[in-house]
Amino acid sequence: MAGISGTGKTKLVELFARAIGCSSENDRFKLISVKPDWNDSADLLGYSNIRGDFQPGPILETIKKAAEDPANPYLVCLDEMNLARVEYYFSDFLSKMETRHYAGDQIKTDRLLSENDFDQNDSNDSQAKYSNLQIPDNLYLIGTVNMDETTHPFSKKVLDRANTIEFNQIDLTAFLEEDYTDQAQSLKVNNQFLKTKYLNLKDLLPAKKDEVRRTTEELERLNEILKKANLQVGYRIRDEINFYIVEALDKELLAKNTAFDKEILQKVLPRIQGSSAIIKEILLELFDFFSGSSFSQENGQLAARVWKYYQANQESFKYPESAEKIAYMLRRFEEDGFTSYWL
Image 1 (spheres, helix red, strand yellow):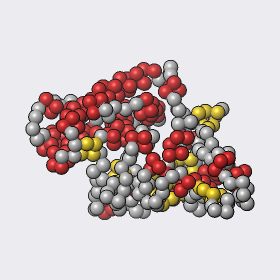
Image 2 (cartoon, helix red, strand yellow):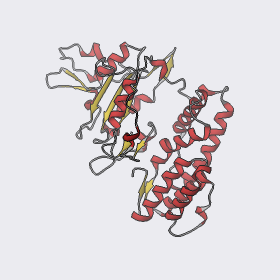
Image 3 (cartoon, one colour):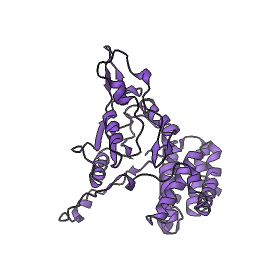
Image 4 (tube, helix red, strand yellow):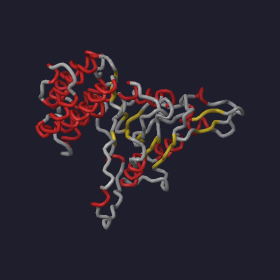
């Protein structure tokens, strides 16, 4: 969850957790403040001290509790997660996520810690407590990030495994129109409420073959544009976009184009940044793809015209949210000579 400081990203994670019955009081919600000096997985998972005693990291007890209570969801919020380089301290998680597989009705992974992570002089019997822990399928990780001079950018390795949701549009007077007399109640949900049905694209086949084909063909057209700067997406993003759209349609949450629009924003556009002429060319082609316009055939300073066109015609666009983001990125390119998803 990305955005400028003070927009309530961390609070929103906490409120979502409480809405589904997870709180710090029942140990099903854990807020972890990431430290700037974290540089390997020991900072998150734990390490053996000079005496040989294992010191569990801030996330390990939550993982252990989640593994012992598989029926209920557990949420972890990594607050300011890019104060340190995510691909350093989160590397073990990123790797273990790739080992997910179904074992019966449970999703299993490789173990997070091996016997070599424990010292033979440990006096707390830590190996017996922690050595068999995997990433449980009822553990959900949400990170909050700011993009400024104090933080680190994300590698594609991280972006490929996450959905990025931005909070940059602020309405300071919105509270004046709220009705504060209604008090929301927490839902009593089990892990099936959040648990994914799908791990591999074959899990959608043959039942969803036609839908998967339509989505993948659209993504392939998008990839043809991105290839010009070696920004094309791979199989992991293809699969996860298909999962998202199928879930949205099955549960009647979003229309097909709306779901695809949000996935472009969350999975594809965060990869785009640069200062070369090919980046501007890609931005214009993407805007045409999202809106049905033809700005990529023109030359010169186009950001102002693109923005006016967006404002006048957005209701007819196939993917309006993605078109709006591209318009912002194009304006930044023309003003600064560089652009990025992270404004």
